[in-house]
Image (tube, rainbow, N blue to C red; front, side):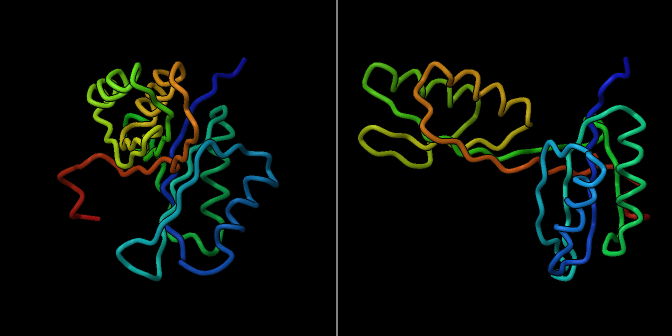
Length: 168
């Protein structure tokens, strides 16, 4: 049995219509799985960065990188393992609370370094920006509380800082 691994691809692309469709189509046609996908403009408005998290065996992950590099709109592909980069994800979670669990929710937020960003008489909206693992931990911790709605970004990642970064 081949071991499944997770890989993060930071793909710099031309910022124009249809590029996302072409990249996601590549994954679809070849039956590659996308665990997470986040796209945003860079400091240059003509260039976007796609952070794609995918999992599979070593051969599949190697094929993904090769196929991404073949795309005309792709400027550069950087591939990271989870330990080679700093990754973050943002989650907004709306929970229903009452006087019996209000203090518990606030304490869990404090421990997890999450913020309560909106509140009404019966609902709280909580924000956390952290590693995907910590986001999952928070979701698991709040399962006993009434989660009403969750919105998550995909994973964003950059290579760890290195003194050779200036020589790019």
